[in-house]
Amino acid sequence: MERLVLHEYSASGNCYKVRLTAALLGLPIERREYDILKGETRTPEFLAAVNANGRIPVLQVGERFIPESNAACFYLADGSALVPEDRFERADMLRWMFFEQYNHEPNVATMRFWIAFVGEARLSEAQRGQIEAKRAAGEAALALMDEHLAARPWFVGARLSLADIALYAYTHVADEGGFDLARYPAVSAWLGRVAAAPGYVAMG
Ligand SMILES: N[C@@H](CCC(=O)N[C@@H](CS)C(=O)NCC(=O)O)C(=O)O
Image 1 (cartoon, rainbow, N blue to C red):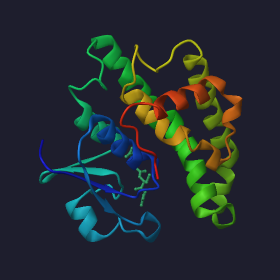
Image 2 (cartoon, protein in one colour):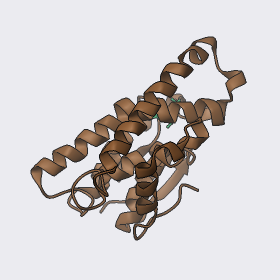
Image 3 (cartoon, rainbow, N blue to C red):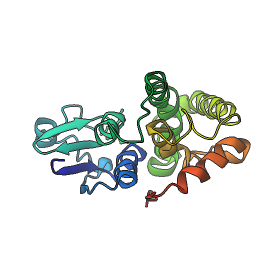
Image 4 (cartoon, rainbow, N blue to C red):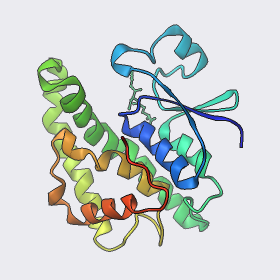
């Protein structure tokens, strides 16, 4: 495989997904840190050379760049045991990864960012006005995950896949956004299974 460099902010769950995928696959990956709170992913240089969307993570593969965490994870894991061989299960894995980006991350991750990183006192009026809706949507996503996991050990099929990695990243730190994981026993048990996977690395 070509040289892999992860452009990241290490406290970000989206970036952690890529590191965790690489670790579970035993792939060496270089890391380059940006402080998103200082706008380091919004400089003209970053926008021109790394990601015109001004965000991390970005996986650099040789001289090319893959923004979007789940796309980066897929690049690393394509053809490995983290992507199901069965066609239906592969699509089901993508279903959960899209769910993560649409229903989970914008609520569970944003609440964590606003509360633990920005601080409630520094939120804008508009952000403060969204808190209750985001909390409710985050709880709904966690409840749906809990119902799904009550009947099976992994999101898709009989083993850990990228669907689990994508959803694990922000779920295991959801308490930092004010979510009480004790309300979701099947999710809590699944978090333990992911953390016990060979090659697992903590977010740090
Ligand atoms: N859908 C993107 C979301 C990327 C994203 O929102 N990144 C945040 C950190 S988690 C970021 O770079 N924020 C800095 C900014 O927007 O300036 C993904 O999954 O990679």
